[in-house]
Amino acid sequence: MALNFEDITGHPALRACIQAQARAMLRAYEGNPRASSVFATQQRWLMAHIGLALHFRRDPSDYRKELTAARFVDVTLQHSVASRNTTHAFIKEMQHYNFIVDAPGSDDGRIRPLQPTAAALAELTGWVVMHLKTLDDLDGANRLATFQARPQMLAQLQPRIADGLVSSVPVREPKRTFSLFTWLNNGGVVMDWLMASVELENVGQEHIPTGILSIGDFARWLKLLRTHLARKLRDAEMLGSVGWLGQRGHSVMWISNEFYGEYVTAQAVKLAIIDAAFAACMQNAVFRQAGARSAS
Image 1 (spheres, one colour):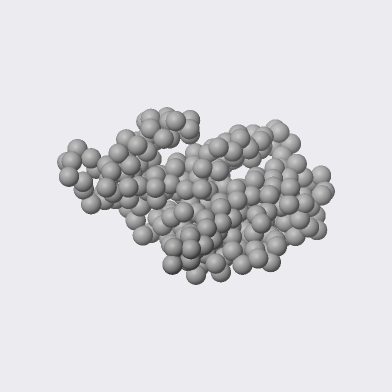
Image 2 (image 1 turned 90 degrees about the vertical axis):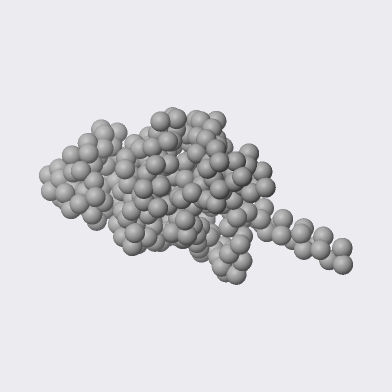
């Protein structure tokens, strides 16, 4: 039985599990900043999932169902995730950094199928693993062990996750401060760092202290322009979502309890989508096994 949004948000261990997940995401970023940048903004994150879903749903016997640049652009436009120019630029960047490459060609020389590289699929697998672990930590189930024992499950799981993400209003239209950072390069990493650095016993306070002392150090670690990050933080400050316990930029930064709640809610929405996708895969596998036994 999948955990739904209400199950997740009402779980007493949610805060600790979400913080552990944020720290795992930061370790993944430190291990490979360039690869992590694929998921570093809301728009890129959704485009990556759309492209991967097209890859897993491809049909090599039918060129109309291959992952091509044209199909990727069409689907991205269909879901209003990005403009045509932005989508083409994303494809070129993914090719430049060897996250997608030309697939073996079809008989029609005009068709140029694309496919993700092993490195890109490894990043996706790591992302799935982190979220399945969080779900297991919440209810003590064995999703992660099941997934690791059946790596081929990724081909059925990811498209279901992608469908859930692009059709979710809370995912597509995040609230207030969360929305500010989703459009910043590495904005997701910014929020992960903020949330990973709080002391959980302080959650519930109007102003929750973080471990951030220097905007400059923060920006350098994230490979962001200090001025760009500072501008976003000023926007968040105007919303009352962040601030400093002393002199601005020279003391501990705090986040508001409301901003913390936005982050936790967004993670709960995503986790519920992932768990629903996982449960659907498992149910489908059970039906297939039952059908095979009946046939024999």
